[in-house]
Image (tube, rainbow, N blue to C red; front, side):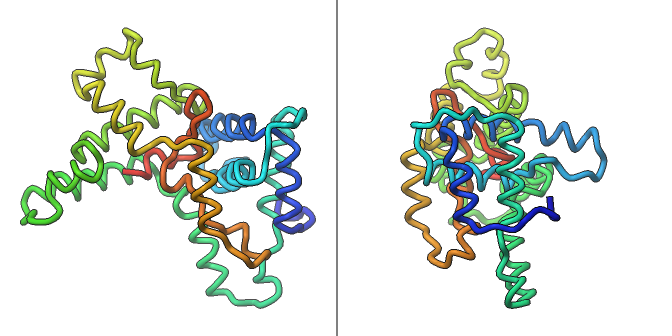
Length: 254
């Protein structure tokens, strides 16, 4: 991919606009669900379509795309969009400012590269287990309940539940699944109403909400638009009938 012709962010947007945003969101969610399997099957090999690129494709589709398109989102099309995104012209080739380059790369890519279960275990160990032995006059159980609508322990559990569910279902999670009998054993660990409330409050956003947040954090410099804020960092699911997570952000919310 690195040997491909460089292009502008606008070139990338025009390529994404050939497809319906709903189909792009679904395709990116499905592809992101394969990344852990790719990692286990090819030690130290990068995924063919990395999380940060899928997140960038999704952002461009929601902000700039429309549903009046007929081209299907094939595997080849998604690979091409990934290639174009990764090969967007970088200011470093002109200014040679290595420090700024690493800040941009880190901001774009690092949130998606840490191992999710390790991050989740660290969150619980620090903010639940270790916190019990400290003075909790401000950041205490009541603080987390007001912020999250549930306990921090429950929030971590919902994160793991959603991530695993999406991983096993081509990147999708449907709240209606909670009414199926095969989900009942989970409710002995996490109450159904806790899961439903936590999902709605902390993990899901509509396309309109996503677009509003993205537009509210613009970058005017055309050479830096690739690094615009991505609302998937706020809530990892985008509502399109079924909920579609992008990358591993479901676990990163915890």
